[in-house]
Length: 97
Image 1 (cartoon, rainbow, N blue to C red):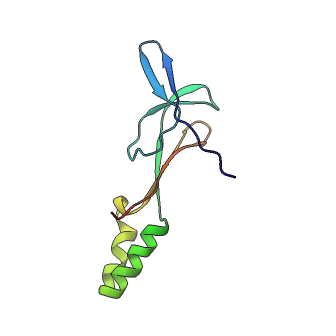
Image 2: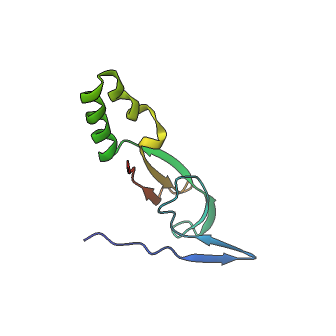
């Protein structure tokens, strides 16, 4: 069974840092539980299920248009990692609606 991660906020000095970056599409600072450090996340764009569905629909409508979702970052899933330990700290799946 998949474990749901609850976003926590860690205070260091005057700033509060999130420990989970779910639902965030841009790189941001967070507190890594594995490294115990404040880091700037690495963002990776990956082809997901909805990207492939959009490709199929565009291929039916226009042959060459089916490649558009594969080339556009907004049409891909966003996965964020810790640059120090490569732990996944957030994910936002692409949603066409």
